[in-house]
Length: 633
Image (cartoon, rainbow, N blue to C red):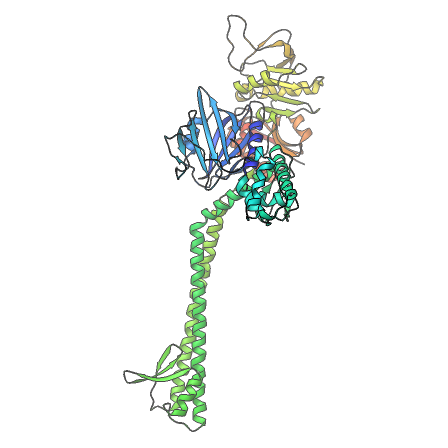
């Protein structure tokens, strides 16, 4: 699928709006033509952005690396931690300019989506620093060290169409669809869709169009361009062509409606990458399979040849008895040679030795021997030929097994290219979180930076702020204006368990809560506060919860997704029908995570396979843990 310039205009505007305030947290290679940017925002879910030689789009799919992309290392070196400042397009050229900046540095990544496509890294002066491949053609040259230049623009500007621009179509015998494609720089689906939507045959010659028809073409072109760019879409995927359409164009059949044009692009362009990768991965094994299949066909033909030869020799042997019944005693008699010819045999001599030639087989005979003896010789030769069939069949069986092994190897290589749907995470999942028994949301810091983020970004006037009576405690926030005592106790319990109390097994530690206006984000004059620390003023409301050092790992259903979380056992058991209760000491975090994950896999609950060992480690308290109880409803 090749993107149209008007489609790219919509895509660029959409991505530019969606990625505002995001920075680059990581860059991955997909294949030699495609790169995945992981974009992070302090308050919003991560975004995965694919830049490929076929286009740029936001994806919900993570593809395993198919092959190395040589640009990734350089892009990581220059772009990591930089803010994505803008995504732009000049005119309707099929070129996207993705600008990054920060730390007194600026870079532009250029994606060209025409012909073979290209990905180019430039500095803020448009000097090329790295690129997918160099270009040296008549109208421009691009290589490392040169200044980047875009190709010259030709034809009409679809963003500024005038009715007078269409008058020249009357001067050509070119069909109107081709004329539109050339003048507007649009692919075939749009060039044919414009006249179709205007109720004009796309193959109608330009010089036969009436003034009214030209006006209809102009209005149709303006409407289509406007609808695509401004997002007035009815997006579909054409199954046969594997293409996504933002609007209906022509008599398209076998269409699947999708939620948005971006979703359609993600499906179709991702499938293109996967298909290309699977073909390349299975290349060597696939070639071997084809070679073996060719051998097998040769062996089948050999069996047929031997079978025909054996049958022909047998027929000739049978004909000798017919010759005898007619009183003919010698094979070189005229009547005998004529009858032999009728059965595809020829009597000849080579170096004075009589030869009976049947098909391509030559059999030595004795003309003075009785015809019965000659027939016996032929029967023996026919049996010998038939015996060769069994040998060929054994070879064929070995070839079939080789084909099976090579096919399995091809399938394994192709199956190694996998992809997974990346669930769009909720904002609170970047922190420690759980829902209390009463359904209130509690969030807490994992470390100093997230502790700071919880308080600075998410603390509201009606929240309740928790901290344990020990250095190294996280801040927890209960998002509830009028919480119950049970909710207060559960959040205090979580605050204690996720502090260093768990790691050191310090039972008896308490926690307290305060109102947001008691939390001061800056240190008193002359003092210093470490990152993630805050000053608490006024009365503290203490809750003794440190004697119940237990947490539970569970999966809860939230807005159609299964979310993995960890919190007080009562709260987790309220919202999850399967959970694992843990307490301090025992296995280190990784081993404990493996064991807990295995329990969920055994219970076969809530898409457990979607979560990795790292996901389990991320939700566990720092320190060792052991499983106390497993509940499987």
